[in-house]
Image (tube, rainbow, N blue to C red; front, side, top):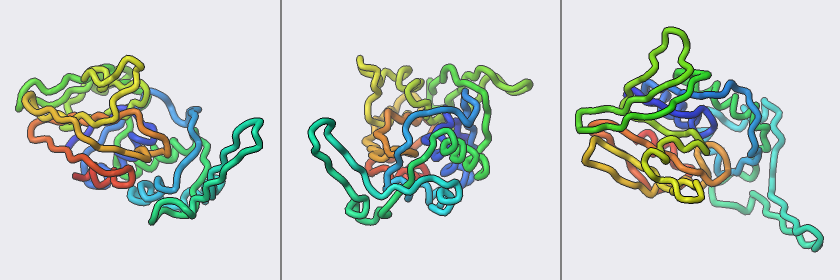
Length: 241
């Protein structure tokens, strides 16, 4: 299948690598040129299983000289009270440590890895809107700005994944953004015009980083199926399904 992914950040890159490794034709549309500055340097141990599933073992992080992180330390300013949470006492099956990363380099590493797995990167290129399926025979169509010379200004895909982060392109189109502009914590899936389901795909650790996700939207054409339920470490499995 042809998959269009809006955004090449950690969520988009992990999704792209997962799908490309499964043999799909994957197109990533990213407006910014990497490496680029971004906030959010803390990973969590549960993330490592996601990275390993796409072919990025811990040795890759060590080779990039990322700082190992063995615990989280919290201190209440001015009170003298503090609390330490060793990762070795964390969730069963999680590694006892993780890494502190520089996002500009880390995000670039993930994006390059997705391309190495077979994903096609369109950058700088911005998806401005998506034509959703109007009937059971239609497919989503991406409308693209900034496409390279000779590249089409639109693309028909079997599925589109919105990993645009705070822009929440599809969430806004589907009316899934509340008044505070925070998208609903659900995945919206659509197959044709008659099937629209909201799935409880709770990605507790996020697709890429150890922060609660804003939203992910997956829209497909005829016969599209999506399955929900499960935590962040199972995201590659859900993408394969």
